[in-house]
Length: 610
Image (tube, rainbow, N blue to C red; front, side):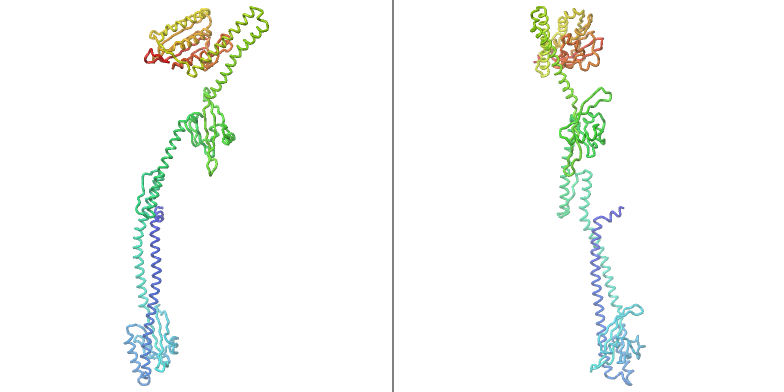
């Protein structure tokens, strides 16, 4: 696999291309050159043989014309002609024959002397004897040697054919020369290929080295490392490509840095949002959720789960919410133990992509539990105020109508009716006063006038104020103050009102012969703790959580008979909050109630807060 990969590299491809180009070029040149050389050598060889044949034809024509080859001098003339042929053409190694007009061999080279006196019947000899000059023919002998045959007619001075010259010459030297030329070209080709390979390696290295650098840089960028730079080796196309790649890397690093920064901002925003956010893909599978969403849904993880299961809504409902604008669903969630309940508002928004349409969904979860509680409290407050006002108003109206209808004529009855009207009016005045007081406390318009206050003296005065009421019911009051408690910095008027409300409730719900205890102590933190404890009827556990709510009464009918407005504990809590303290209530049915408020004390006493 590695070797195959090496053969597929650009460097090897470039070297192979260069070597193939050189090889093809040399081969084309060699074929053309060798064929030209061979043709030239063959033509030169043939021309040389023709020249020799013509020269021999001229010499033989002289001999034949003189008649030296006829009669008694024929043998001497033939020997003289053979000696001439051997002396003139002995180095060529060719077969030469001088023929008379009948085709009989008169003279030949020594190697072929056996042919003297025999008749040569070849076609080319016949053509020469017919007066056709420059006859040529290539043949292959039995040894597979290429030879060239040349025939020339021998003519007398009067242009009469009196014989012929027949030459058979081997082309060994011509073929050897062509082979040497081929060997030269083969050697040159190998040398050229070797040099081409070396130069190709060098040239390919100059091209592929920057490409390898670009490849390494691209791999580094793919792995997230942007600190490397591609070296720019030349001002050519690859150099400009390297510069462009370096600039692209820089811009990509900056873009990723900005993207990471934006993602961190987004993660920070999502993590610290008071609302829950869930993102799902186009298939409805949850991809991202923030911590608040998990808290609101009461799950540890929701990534990978269908959005329908996470929100516990059917798919049709989700589609309707996503397609609508401003429409939301309300979910009610409960803790596993059923003690806690919270309400969620779910709003869905589609994620659009220009080329693909809707590609996901964003679900926004808002905890509206407090808002629902406030709305419920507001509705209950309006209903309670309306009810509290309507009852005395109805009573006043009824007794006023009775007085108008003639009850004034009966003094005793009229006095009783007027007394009822006066009591109901005072009850409404108390209710309106308490409401105004709560309003000032809510809007922080009530100013605290802190001053040093003797706690023992304050509790004794509270007990004295309610002594008459307690004596009527035979209730015994006990005041206990820790010796460490001396003076405290507080608003005496507001704390007196808190104690009055607590004492009034304690007296109302304590049976005859009961006991009420006022106590004060110092906490470890230095804060002042004041308690009002009675031995009354107590409060059921189911009502303890709402006992400080406005207009809340445990026994509404009995509370109204006793003249309560249901705002006393609410006012007490707001006043204690204004002091920066806390108020708690502990109670057990038929065993009594203990209300304790704790007031933190400033470091320097005697200061005045306004």
